[in-house]
Length: 132
Picture 1: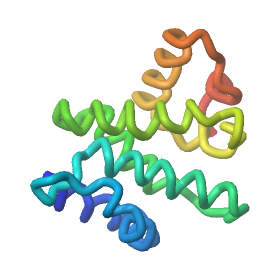
Picture 2: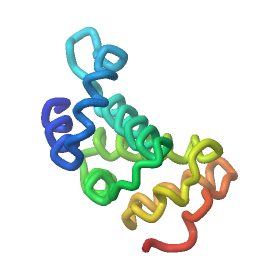
Picture 3: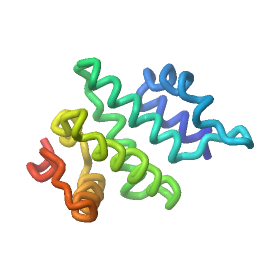
């Protein structure tokens, strides 16, 4: 599963492979696999570092792929995309302005993010303004 997910993530964002190569030693499991959650966590770090470096980049392909997993992926991928990508983005909203990424969320991803806000009692800035 990990190899297919890596291929799909890199196809959506070719620059991600360079970040993943730096991260791989942190995420590699004893059996040589990388869990979907760890891949999505690495993708979160990539997006956040890119935004923090003021790279004006269109993340639509990344978020469209995440939306696909959240909306209709098998359970392990749906959970990983939701909790290890979307939640991770929300959890650092004090450091990175969420308005730089919330407009990329698809409908199901937005619903998940809003449910996470309700659970945590937080209101992610820009999440309730509707998609662009």
